[in-house]
Length: 65
Image 1 (tube, one colour):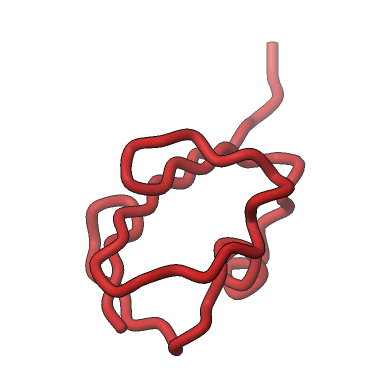
Image 2 (cartoon, helix red, strand yellow):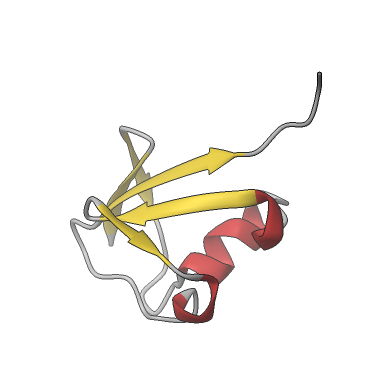
């Protein structure tokens, strides 16, 4: 299936979840915010299966001062 991640088309296996997308990109769930189809997703929903055509935005938190 094809989804958009941060505006770019990406091929994913059927049954992929937000958690699996984060794992593939070596991102820590506690250090990101995710929108799925323009709606903020809580961490407890990261196991929801994705669908063809979904739009995902991943924002990484960075520290600094």
